[in-house]
Image 1 (cartoon, one colour):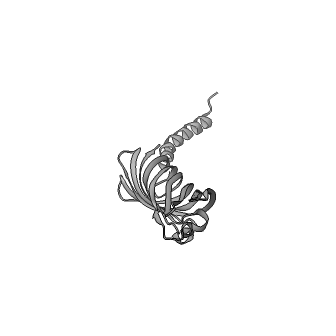
Image 2: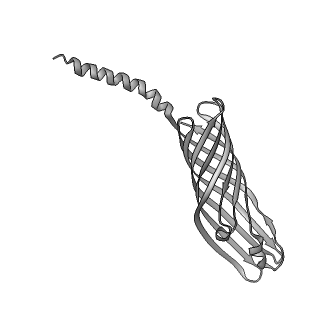
Image 3: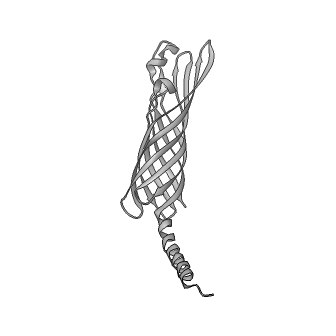
Length: 200
């Protein structure tokens, strides 16, 4: 039996679906990335001068590695999560006495995006980092002691991205992690990095 209303409804649904599919595809996109950079963490030398009773020499910079992924909603807004290993900072004093702190964490951000052209954009992000620090202290004549701390603190970042193709891009960014020096063993951490990105 001929059913015009049903047939017309199915045709209309098919047309709407075909028309909406490109819009949905353009509304957002998943992406992943990986990068390397230089990290710096503040060390409170006053709190560890007891190692030998004299001023200490510090190495507050190291190589950082990161991986991340996110979802971009349209042109101006996205969310992002990642893992960062900021390496190890250290302090030394005569003895020799040594103090070392390694920091890593999982971060999550809300991302605001400002397109400048089809290929180039600026972005800013605000969120939190769930960090973990491993502190090792070696004192001459006393041996080695270790401690582990973890917490959640504020994080933010600024950067720029250039897309070579629809899928492949590169980003440069500066990130700051507002970490409690007394709790972690070293304070605020800053990371300047270069990353490759792939958008699905």
